[in-house]
Image 1 (spheres, one colour):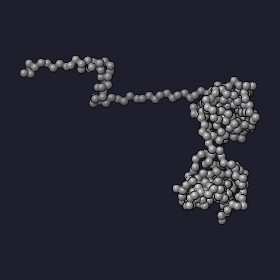
Image 2 (cartoon, helix red, strand yellow):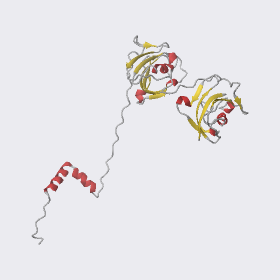
Image 3 (cartoon, helix red, strand yellow):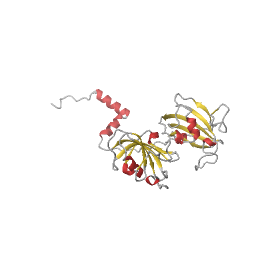
Image 4 (cartoon, one colour):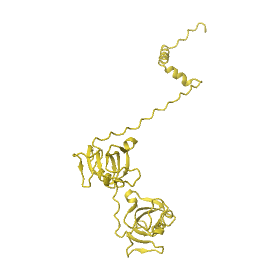
Length: 306
């Protein structure tokens, strides 16, 4: 019976598909997928790194402001290179994002966010005066050239190491900005506690500015959330959570003695002013870098006890 059985014929469709697979190379990949012999891994070559951005061309009017430039009473000159599409201007305390390049008047570039490939971000009140004033003239998307006199830049003889001297020229593009609250006003009694201030045995003086609705006082081992601003007796503000727009939290036994003692006098919702002697603050000659010396004044609002 087997000898007389008809021969088995492969379907024409299967043969055609096999031919197509082999012809296209897919058959080889299919073979590798089920083959018992693993194929050697081919090394992956890394992509070449992108070249650094090229430096912007030196402006043709870098030596001096043209007659078409607009000047402010301070002596700052500027002209718009690219108009922006925004309508709102940043304020003096806002945080801005910009691209910029700076030159001295002989055409030497001394700084550029363009060549770094990363826009710069900073509070507008913590840069040279010419920037603080000038960027407030701009709107989002605008690009402007500034001629900044020495007195609005780093001066004729800069005290900051490496800072360029004399008039400076900047091309600035305002990419974005974040509105920030204005810093608190300097207290009128910042130089000394008034007669109605209360005093503790340690020498800490304080005055309640606003009464809260809380009933419990924090303990030294608690973590508290507060808003605060700090000044030296001459009215210079050295720190503020208010200007950052974000309250701060910390263990009450991990701060200066005047804070540890003073905040325990408050309940949630209280806002008080503290006159803290130097020995309860950072000392007359602080060892911590950047810490203010001598007596300090703080406005503190207790937001929560954790």
